[in-house]
Image (tube, rainbow, N blue to C red; front, side):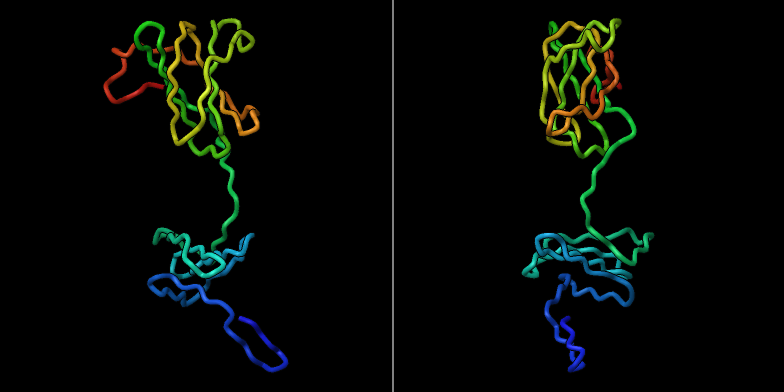
Length: 183
């Protein structure tokens, strides 16, 4: 709304409407985002939506009915788990090892470098064996090694270490139930 207090007049400048024409009886808010998009919290109706600066619906979702939110905002979010990345290693033919790594909730991981070493002498004895980019919830890495300890690092886009998993030892495939991996 554009308000002209001298003329005691309000003019509609823009309108943002959900496809089902939701109207909130109470509560709600509007947030203008950097770049001009608009984020709307539909208050008592439990929905939240993002619209382009031209008014096109870009995103629409809702809270669970057990949640009551009178406002909704959109901000950048960075997930920083308080746990280590989880990793599992399975032995294949010869010295082939398959690793599966994930870090639930982490948003800054760009790559997963795999380290390998003899173990008892600590991290100074570990060398970088492989690295894969993060593409989803879990990354799989196949490498050739006979080293007994295999930790995996989580690195951000600048190569900074975020965390390191515990060192795992490859398990014989016959000891891992079909369709399930052991941590």
